[in-house]
Length: 374
Image (cartoon, rainbow, N blue to C red; front, side, top):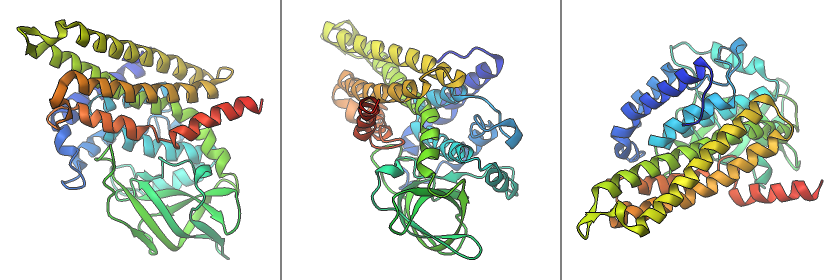
């Protein structure tokens, strides 16, 4: 696991690992059938009760006040068994971090104060997009009393279960964008059917159509890119931890299967070809864990160049997860493609999670552009 040093980190590590084994692993295949089967609401409620959604929120705003290392511990353990719940936690946290980057503490207090149940409201957010990469997005208009949003927003994660949504929007004809908070219960919002995506099936997402929906500006107009990038710098390590969790789950299943599968009179783990694949899997998995641990420390301590460290770690580990889950299928042979085992789901999830916070190729191009620009 990713190393946790203080008492609170160890408690989060233990709680999330035990929760994942008990609540996620036994019903992974059933949960993955969403939206064609019921949503795992009881599991989500238990995750809320364990404060998985409060980890990085400051104590003054009702959170635990931990850093990205703590969140990475929890996401690593969740995604080791089923990355759908990890993506739900990541989405809500990323939206909150964007509000914090915008200095919109008042909006966070407003959201939580409107809660009349024991459950924390969830924030919907298009977390698989970088708004700077989107040529077409919703538009906003200024009214006498504030702002309204109109237009479409594709693939808004948690749109069907979120109480509020944090959305990017531009003025008509403008290049810069801003972030706005809307109440998902307001009139003028049409939520599409849950999207059946490549991976993380149990993390619901849907397209939104907005018709002059009342909205509240987060931060300042035209500063959306700055707020998003501040959030993405911190959350990149958490995204990497999700992919590393998938890698660990794939390694565990490949090792267990190869010990129990016999061919030619001996367990296939004794075949040199299988041993070479397993060795590559273990090496990538070990390196990913070490890299996340070090990158998390750099982010939390705000070491010099921590932003580049976080984004580079995420790009490297998300690539490695795609390779490793492919090898995980190969170890299982033909049954690796069957839903009875977890490898084909991990393969899909690893591919899908590459797009967290923006398309993978564009995130890599941003790295070289930054260096070329000095």
